Amino acid sequence: MILLSGFVASRSAFSLETATAVSATLVGVVHGILFWLLRRRQRQVRREAIGQIREMLEDLGKNRLQTIKMSLYMVQIHQPEQEERTRQSFDRVYQILAEMSTLIDHISEESLADWRHRYRQTLQRVESESQ
Image 1 (tube, one colour):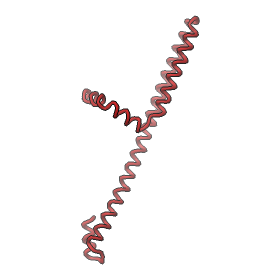
Image 2 (image 1 turned 180 degrees about the vertical axis):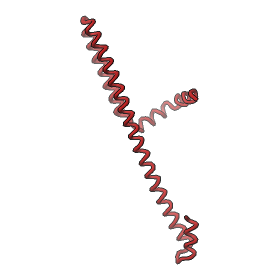
Image 3 (image 1 turned 120 degrees about the vertical axis):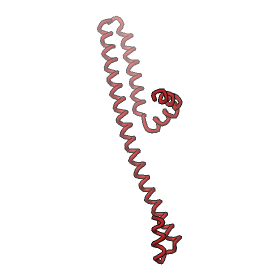
Image 4 (image 1 turned 30 degrees about the vertical axis):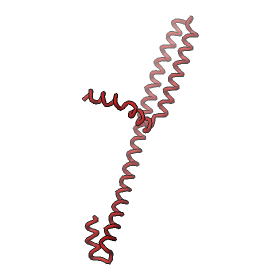
């Protein structure tokens, strides 16, 4: 495109340098816009993926919570004398699950990047062993 602009400039009133500079600027602007659109789409796809991961983790957590609730309920029915200890265990489980829910809510692209950076060596070892 820049060479073509030089050819056009040689046949018009613009100097070769002016035509080349204008066309280089236009190419840079077009590339910048295309790059910005691509990065915007990548961010959108990442946000959607993180949202789906969040939903999956939340669903898994809720499933585990129901299992724990049922187990504690069965213990309470079969061993009523341990009711206070069971209630305390139940309260602790809810506290842990609330903490898990908070962690899930804070998952983001940045937190995943931080996690990967922190565990990079372990991840590289695992990836090399799996290949």
